[in-house]
Image (cartoon, rainbow, N blue to C red; front, side, top):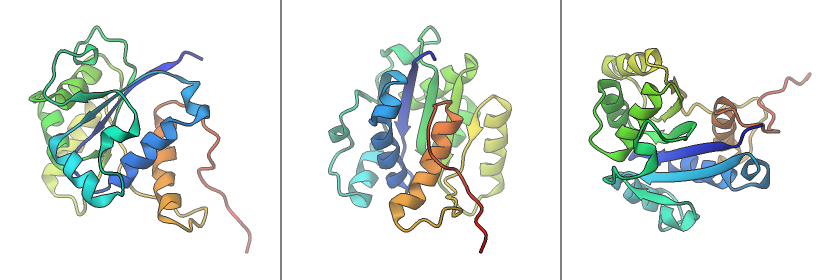
Length: 192
């Protein structure tokens, strides 16, 4: 199996536990053997929200190569880059709207645009409810352009007991959508 190059973007939506658990999962031996390169981009609002929602003071402490959101001079800002996957987790509705409109005012928007134009995998883990018609239309536009909308909707098949257990049902689904070979149980049926 070819090793993957993955861009992780974190935007200013609530749900930083999804980003935290996703990054932690990428560091496991199971996934490290499938990844050749990672890049992390953090929006300005994401850093503030991350501090307020988690016990980690900075996302940069998670030991990933971090790129500034205003830096367009990075390999994955170009269509000639060899990155395979981009996951935006969590993805704010503002970021979704800018991607749907083709606005590349920052590195996250530009990298997403590159993934779509090069027909590579773009997964947006959206975090908002309820949705208005603008959100729904933006999701439709991104889907029609080749992106994958993966709302942060946890599963409860496995009777999760902790917030991490609940969060991990979304994280494992994202990893599955990204094409990683994972050993997680998505669901099971039990006789009662």
